[in-house]
Image (cartoon, rainbow, N blue to C red):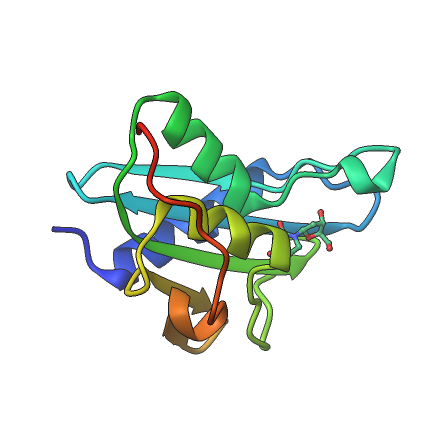
Length: 137
Ligand code: THU
């Protein structure tokens, strides 16, 4: 099984695929599925700023489109101009809600900086999150 260090390395590599001419900020994510496969993503911006898609959601939606429904971990990192940040980069509220849709409380989020990996669970990032009953998956 892939380690959090390896997953973080995949997220760092994914930063290179960002399309972020407006913010200049490159974000990468690597999502681990329960079956051991992984999907990466990067942020994709738009001239209409609100349309921009975060790295985490790029990874989630690619995986879900590919039929995956069970996830254990995601590594996320970001940096201006693609240079890894010193400070923790934590997922935005929209991405937390997307995680809530597909993940359990113990889903792990690894926030990767230049020097360390900080791990939290989804219930720590989004306590009392809204999740409808599990429908057909
Ligand atoms: N961004 C992400 O990709 N993930 C997050 O969790 C927060 C923000 C992106 C959106 C935008 O393209 C850039 O980072 C600057 O906010």
